[in-house]
Image (cartoon, rainbow, N blue to C red):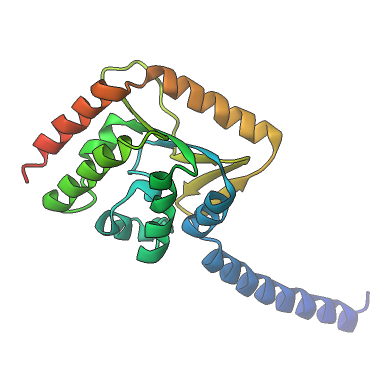
Length: 204
């Protein structure tokens, strides 16, 4: 190309780059982890959640949920109430695996962490909700990030934004990770006992 045509091409590339940057930022604002999770949650009948960072948002109290806003995990109070209603009415089956450290990571003040832990015990009484705790003494090598398997969709709330997987390969890989974590977890009275120890440790 001659000099004028080359410059025109450069100008077009710069303009396209600016437009692409604006478009990407707009998409990031609309695709939060909470919005993706809520969309999948409304259609799913079975769900599996693994957590090593924080209590899964759909089991959170409003106070706890608010602290998850920095990673796009926060639910509006109405959405949170609607989502948890599905747990109580039995329309969705849920298995939750918590690394024991989650129970002691205080993302909220002690009195609010106390309420959050009590909420876990309350929800664990629902016949369609199974909550397991992976003890600190377990030799299980934990996954490096929280993830959710909702229906046929896998969601991972990474720092830079949510990642959504729908391929068979990713679904199976995360399913295997979950199965390994489930083998290492304690359920029923043993899980409740571990939550009770964490409750006592809040000092509230």
